[in-house]
Image (cartoon, rainbow, N blue to C red; front, side, top):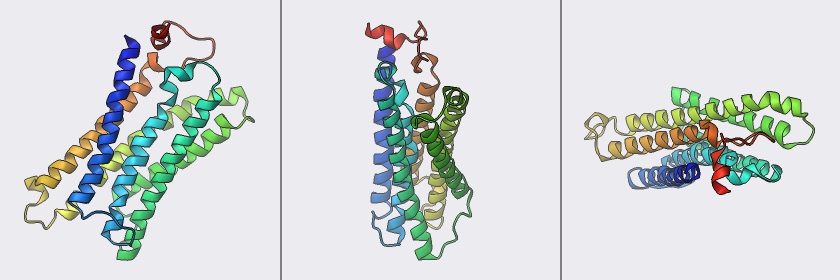
Amino acid sequence: MASGWFYMSCMVLGSLGSMCILFTTYWMQYWRGGFAWDGTVLMFNWHPVLMVSGMVVLYGAASLVYRLPASWVGPKLPWKVLHAALHLLAFTVTVVGLTAVFGFHNHSKITHLYSLHSWLGITTVALFACQWFLGFAVFLLPWASQWLRSLLKPVHVFFGACILSLSIASVISGINEKLFFVLKNATRPYSSLPGEAVFANSTGILVVSFGLLVLYILLASSWRRPDPGALTDRQPLLHDRE
């Protein structure tokens, strides 16, 4: 039964993640004119799509590698590599997303990093970079002692959840900021909830739902990878497979 709930949660999570990316892409394509890489606002349109894809969906998926029951048995190294590789992919997509917005700002002579959204976003990316390099150096490379890994593991897990939470906050503030900008002088302003506002707000709800489900799976004690030699009845996912 526990495994059924787990895999059902993963299916819901996959659906939510796909919808987050598809909704953001549709918003930028249908209401904001599509995509280009020429310094115009069409270049900016890559920013929300890539940030949602990298900092939310891929980051969330990478965070859950150790919740897969298959990762609980056998060598841990392949799962460490997968965990690090997915996070590196998420970071790469994020950097391209940042390049899009900085390129647009440079082309349009817009000041960088002046809004709360930009402060949250750049702080989140900086923490992500530090988290990845620390995790790679301590948990993937063989030099670190078991004592050091045990000491830093709770810190690594804590900041992983913090970065995901900050990513969600950055996306929500970014959606809100974008709507205020583009619907400020429209015939139907943001306050009248035109179709674009309803759709973008719904996209934000999807992002929050995805993030909350990721955090729930991360925090569920019975779905955590057990320490070596510590398999107990608190890990029903493995017992369901017997």
